[in-house]
Image (cartoon, rainbow, N blue to C red; front, side):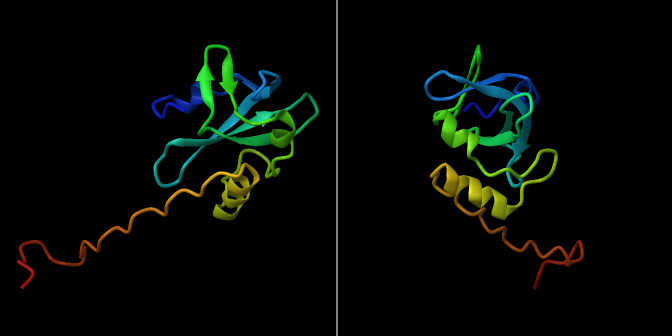
Length: 124
């Protein structure tokens, strides 16, 4: 999916499964903690139903809505974590497994910048 899309523009869009059947409406968008890139969407699957979490990669945003490359039944069976709360790493892992997605690589280690060193010291 395009990574330069404003996540707010997804909210309220219709969501469709791989066969073009309407699943529901995008209710929330969740950003990756490390990158800030939209990673998951919560789709309201019906008037009295719950929200189903769907991966934004490899989904596609087209003029008519968000197209998710999975069957409607698989999407509706996604783990339910409720909306409006942060997804924990364990919950994300459950979603990756549910959709048989490859786990993302771990974030690169940030080298120690020695922030305790005083300005003007040459480090010797």
